[in-house]
Structures are given as C-alpha cells and as structure tokens.
Amino acid sequence: SLIGERVGHLVLGIDTSGSVGGKELAEFLSEVQGIAKEVHPEKVDLIYWDGCVAGHEEYTYADVDNIIQSTQPKGGGGTDPTCVMEYLKEKNIQPEAIVMLTDGYIGDWGNEWQAPILWSICGGNDAYAPVGKTIHVKD
Image (cartoon, rainbow, N blue to C red; front, top):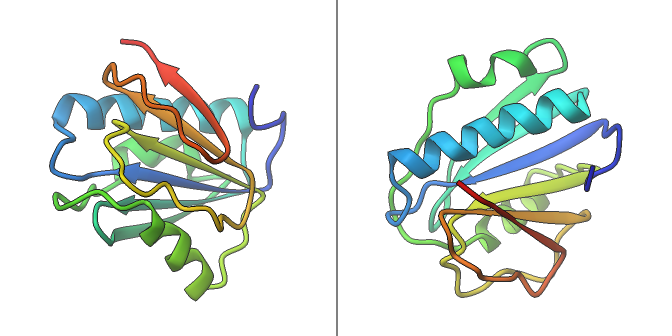
C-alpha cells in the first residue's frame, strides 16, 4: 500500500470542481471507501475542494465505513488544491498523510504540504503531480 499499513490521521481531499461529474465523484468515493478499508485510519478529515474548501467532514475509526452513506459532497467551482494546503494550516490540522482525489486538471499543485501526499487521478488524465506521489486509477 502506498500510504503505509496503518495511518492514524488521514486527510482525504476530494476534487468537486466543475470538471468533475457524477461518474468521477462516484469513483473518488469508492476510492475513499477502499483506502479507509485498507488503512483503517483512526481519524479522517474529508475535505471537498474546488477553488476553495467547500466542505469539511470529520470521521472517527468507527464511522469510516459509513462515509459513502453519510457524506454530502459540495463544490462545483474552479480547481485549486492549494486551498486545502492553506485550510489545513489555518485549522492546524496535522495529518500523517494526505490523499487528494482529482481528475488532474490542475494548474498549481502546491508545494508546502504538511504531510506526505498521494495524488489519485481518475478519469483518464495522465497528469503527474510535481509534488508527492501520483497514481492513476483506471476505470
């Protein structure tokens, strides 16, 4: 596994920019579920972002399995992942790892991330992030 066998505190950032449709969002959420089942984090901060942070949900270990049922996706604007970086700083959220789920249509990937970052790119875009690790999730 790319993010280690066990991560206590995980930030999952989900791209809900205008270029992300229902199909991509469903893929992101199924990835989130997969990551949660594999890593069993004690705490998850689930952050929806487009040009800014549009939603922030917190889950404990016990709730992680219900993320898909309970989450309320928000967003629909531009694409700027650095808003998540800034938001984490502002709220003093210090995860052990960050996973960003996106379609990869990004101008500025940010470079001051607080933790090791993994970019999970869905939807066939072969972009590579210049920071952290990139994986491409095939349909």
